[in-house]
Image 1 (tube, rainbow, N blue to C red):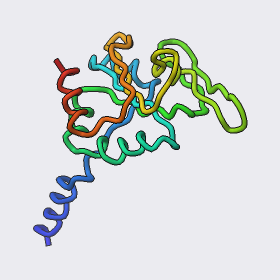
Image 2: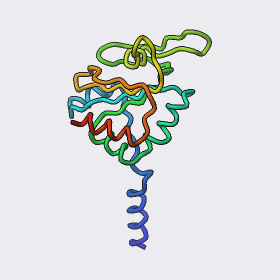
Image 3: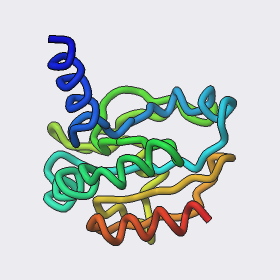
Image 4: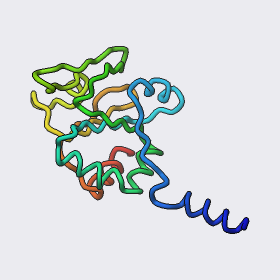
Length: 154
């Protein structure tokens, strides 16, 4: 019986679904940076964006990517249509409605706007001082995302 329980625990811990991607909040970043300085990767997306959903289903479910993001970076999943206020860098950002059930969050605009527009999905990478060091607005497959993470780690 003890062996059976140990086997169940072992396979439960080592199964692919066990290690989940840790998504942090903007509000938690300040205290996390005091513990360990890391680059921050913000994934800016919407619920209706097909490319965003593809990245969620493929790239962010890849176990190697999950492991690298969890161990080397702080990952933030930001829905650009989030309606709650978000405090980051001693500033409060709000949802800006632009019509009936349509709008965008100020923080998504701040981090994701490139060439005066925002195109989803957006990856925004911030250094340890919370300064933007990279913005990329395209769907990345797992292979390309791994390459990006390797370059960011250098």
